[in-house]
Length: 141
Image (cartoon, rainbow, N blue to C red; front, side, top):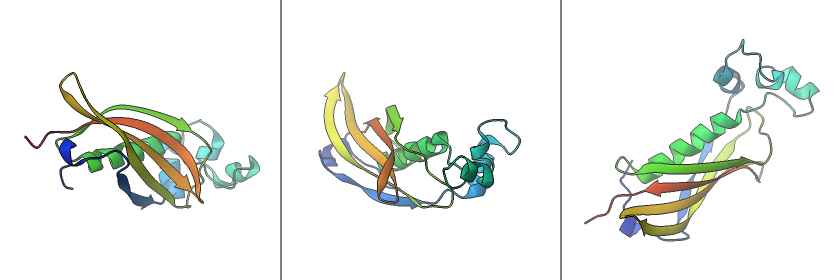
């Protein structure tokens, strides 16, 4: 992972897409196999009966992936300052998700270099989770 610097970041820069495939076991294990949450998070057949086509991918798992994606983009000296996410539609385990994003704003705020990103998970060509993330980046100087 390379370090990203404020001076080298521009509005409309695209983040390199990253493909992740949440497996059924990953989706089920996220909450625990014996956790009494929505059965569609722990059982493929329950998800099919609910009409979603399989085991659901927990939104918090997608959120953790988006946070890691942005954190990796920022580098070791950068850090996530704020994140707001909206879940647009469910995702089904064993289907690939693409994480992607772009820089939508950059500014110096209270002496801090803030870059705002819009990131998204895309499944089957459609966005499923959208997030706006503020990242603090170091300066080259």
